[in-house]
Structure formats: C-alpha cells, structure tokens
Length: 256
Image (tube, rainbow, N blue to C red; front, side):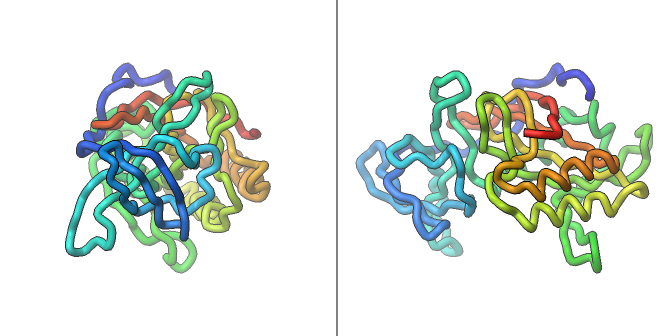
C-alpha cells in the first residue's frame, strides 16, 4: 500500500452549519427525536437504517442539519454523533449514510487518492453493472490518458462506524447486499479494476477488517475478494461542525 498522502488533514467537504443537541430517541429506523441546545424538540431524518453499533447513544450529543424543503417530510437530518473514541475521549462520528459517496468523490477529485487509484479523468455515479446489470456501482472511474493502468475502476463505498478499539469493522450486521457487492466486484476482474472503499467516518481508527462477528459470510467473501485481486482502500475522515477532513488511508487486516 502506498505511503499516506502528504495532503491528509485537509478539508475535503465543507458542511452547512450544524446545530447540536441531545438524542432522546431513535425509532422506526428513519426517525430520531432530538432536543436542540436552544431547547426546541425536533424530529430528524435518520439516513442510517442499520443497528448503528457503538454509535447509537440515547442521551448523547448529536449534530443536525436544517434544510427545510417542500419535497422533504422532515426539515432536519441527523448528521453526526459524539461517542467515546479509542482513547476514551469524545469524538464526532459521521452517521449519515447518504454522505460517503459525496465525500469519496470529493476526495478523488481533490487528487488525494491518486497514489492508490492513479490519475482520474472522469467519474460517473450509479452505473449499472453486475449480473444482468441489475446492480449499480457507486463510482465508475475512467483513468487519465497518462495512467499506468488504463482499465476502468469500479469503486464500491461502504460507510464504516463500528469499531473495536482502533480497528474499524464493516459490516455491523448481516448484509446480503454487501455480500452481493463483493461477488460482483470480483466479477469485473480482470477486465477492470475493482476497489472496495470503506469510508471510515471517524478519526480514531488506524486499521480496517471485515466484521466477521456480525456477518461471517461477508468475512469469507472479503478474503476471497482480496485473493482474487479486489483492492481495499480504507479512507479515514475526521468530522467537524463545519466540514470533513481527509486523514489518509489505513492498514487492511483480512481477519478481525
């Protein structure tokens, strides 16, 4: 794996001003009740429908984005949660699963991943691929003309917030969809490059591994994918109230 990028620590995605409060309840998967620091009680959309292992703390501090729109049922979106970090100190974690694709795209466009992906000429999102073209890849990259490897690059992004100490783990529950994505990434080889890109949405991790305890089958497929030539590039980010920082690529472990 290439050495860490010298540009790490740079802001890659500015965020609209977020408002802080306390999480009172998360329910029906998509909803969260929050008491803002102003005292106002609001219901926010929760884009993360999973169990949110290790980052769901009732009574904990959270950050919300306010974006009222006639096309939205809820004006508030839950963006970040404050949790104990690997060293026991509070840390902010990005929990909005709609954000990582934007974040990774911004990182690629800024050139931070060139040591791993090579120079990129074009990026397309949600391109049909796989068996009967029934799946959609998160990002399809076209290498620049001077790239060493001219093959297209299929990039599957996975938001990752579950940890054991400084070890980031994905998934935190059984994910048949995630299993299918690994199989389909293997399917594009060797005509194209296949990249699994765990988006580590917290700054306190230094390693990444599959979450075998949550989904043993995913772990098996992960190791098959590594052996087949799928590249794994876990990208670490730091979350603040006004933006997200790129913190580099961390080590990959085949077993958790």
